[in-house]
Image 1 (cartoon, one colour):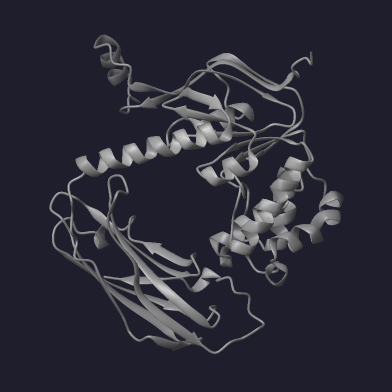
Image 2 (tube, rainbow, N blue to C red):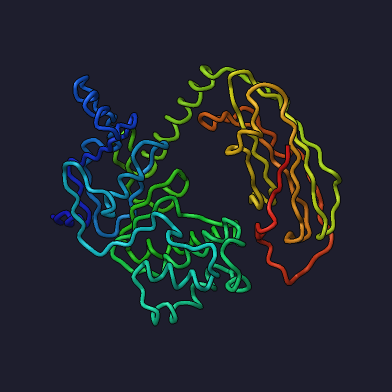
Length: 388
C-alpha cells in the first residue's frame, strides 16, 4: 500500500484576528475614561478561525469564497505577511507569492525602469534582470511602450507588465491571488497556457479565485471558506458547484430584501462617427433618491475590454443626495484605433457600491481612420474629463 505523501504546506488550527479602532483616544484623559467605563476603543475582527488543511507536492489547490470570507488573509498568512494569533503554518519549500502584482511600481519611472525596480524587490540582481528583460517584454507585449512613463499606461498594461515580471521568479510553491487571467482575451490565453505548463510540471500552486471555470480546469483539490471557517474541502467540481449554489441562493435572498430603485438613467453623445483626433462628449443624467447617496460610472468598452473608465465616487460635489444629476464627460480619441466602441453607464449606492441601475450599451460609436503603428491598448494620459 502506497504511503500518503508528506504535505508541502501544513496549516493547523490557525486563527488570525485584527483590532479595528472604534474612536480616537490620543489624550490621557480619554484613555482614563475608556478604562473606567470598560471601553476597549476597538473591535476585534477575526477573518480566520481555526483553519486546518494540508497541501501536497504537485497539488493545484483552489481556495474560493465570497468577498470578506478570509481568502486573501489566509494567502497572506501562508506567505508570512501575517502572523497567526494561534496555530501554525509549515512550508516545506521555497515560496513565491503572486499576491500584490506591481507593488513598488513607480508611475514616474518608465516601463523599463520599473522592470528593474520590481525585479529587485523580487530578489533579482541587475545581471539577472538583464538576462530576462527581453522575455519579460515579449510576454507582456509592451515592446513599443517600455520607454514611456508608467503613469501613461492603462491599468491593464500595468498588470500585464507586473505579471510578466512575477512569473520569472522560480520556487517550489506559488501563491496566486486572483491572477489567473489579466489583460485582453489573447493575453488571458497566454496566462492560461502558462498555468497549464505549471500544472504539467507538477508545481505546487495555491490559488484564490472567484473563477469557478478556472477551478474546474486547473485544480485537483479545492476548499470553500465562509466567514473565516472552512465549509468544505473536496474535488474542484464539488467545491465549485457548492460555491455557485450558495451565491445563487444569496442573490435570490438579496433581491427579495433589496428595495427597487429607478434613477431614470440616460446618456447622449455628441455624434456617432469620429476621427482619431476627435473628442467624444457624453452627457449623462440620472435622478438621485432621497437618503440614498449614489455615484455614476461611465466606461468605454470594446470586445468586452474596458479601455477607459471613470466614476464620480470620490467627488461629493458631483453626487447630490436629492435631485437630478447632470454631468458631461469628454474623452480624447487620439490613442484609440479604428473600430466600434460601446459606452456603459451605471449608478451605484455610495455606501456599499450596490448597483442601482445599469445600461450596458447606452451608446455605440465608430472611430474611422487607422494607424497601424499604434498599439490597440489605450494610454490614459488623456482620460475622461468631467464637469457638472
